[in-house]
Image (cartoon, rainbow, N blue to C red; front, side, top):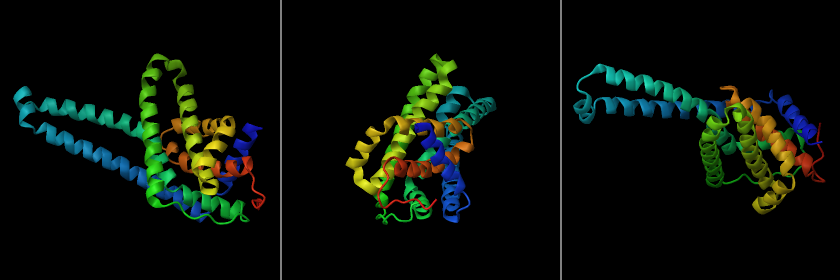
Amino acid sequence: MAVGLAISSFGKTLSQIGDPRFRRVIFKGIGLSFLLLFAVNFGFFKFLVWLGQSPTLQELFGDLPWVLNVLTGAAVLFMIILSTFLMMPVAALFASIFLDNVADAVEDVHYSNLPQVPALPFSEGLKDALNHFGVIVFANTVALSIFVVLSPLALFIFWGLNGFLLGREYFQLVAMRRVGRAEAKKLRKKHMGTIWLAGILMAVPLSIPLINLVIPILGAATFTHLYHQLEPSPQAASSD
């Protein structure tokens, strides 16, 4: 049943890809993700240039061009790895910020009988999104040491960990719009198994660079469907 609900929810999400409102959020999320990653890379390289011209570094190594070359090469490799690592949490950050837009687009098409809900204040949505971003980055950073020790299982650990984190966060945010924070936590605990499984199905393509920029936004829509299927409202007669 849980697998069927998750697949059904994702299928409904894919069927709405052509919706202009839906596409607008996807393109906005991808664009802002690239912009933030570019800004991080640009800032890091500016720091390297400053470091290469540092009198302290020149005193240590002399005026040796190879030092700057080694630093630049190492920095490029480091930023490629870091950008790949940050793609998913950055995309998840913007998906959380735009979740209201995604959920509204889904509900307008599939659950048109539902009453409108007031938009979450931007400051509160941003706070939740940043908390979610911090948890994902911290958890995956800690998990890197486990990936090294248990490298054959690294992919499964990544899927399980991020499936739990993304499922927990997105279901909570979607449910909060309808029933408030306290009740959303109760519902999340009640349906944790199904939520985790749906999160894992979403986390599998997160291991593919570039594709993982789209998945968090699709995930926000998927969990909107999942919430309404797990806790159907008498008013939420689907228009499907």
